[in-house]
Length: 200
Image (cartoon, rainbow, N blue to C red; front, side, top):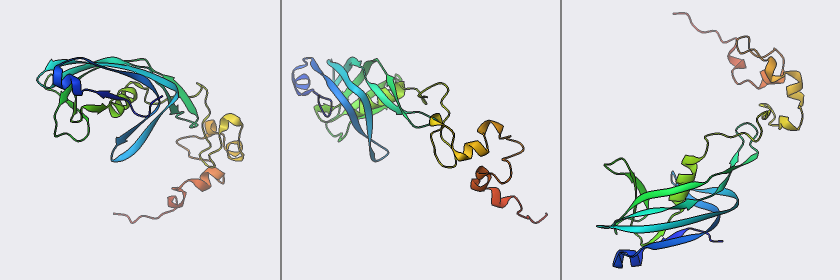
């Protein structure tokens, strides 16, 4: 098991030979929006990468990455395992002045991974590839009941006092929440109901 996926491209840059890297990851740490993020895996995620020279500081990366992501259920926030089988393929461009690797779009429309350190850290690239392939939202079960909007109780484990007073399915969107219910008391707009506005 390794902490960060690296591929060493020094010999490739000097002699135009191929480069290879493989291993297993139990998570990926990467930077997004100026803060460090962690992508969790349910089990060791194998990856295998080959890089071939194209000339002029450009090369091509190909390989496979098979992570099982741990994502949150969109309704109740439980962990959900999402297996992926990803085929990797992207252009690389070596620019010695670059501090951290980043992806940019080439004139052809293809993405290019630009890097400056011959010891290339693939963490951000693998994380972005996995997140782009993952579904936008997942459910731990098709009939997930979600959380109580008042107290946060997991309704899959049984009803709470609030859901017993005002079952979610009985709330009418046009008529509003029944008067006197716990949900009504928690509604931040309830206080505006009797607000008198000046007439034009």
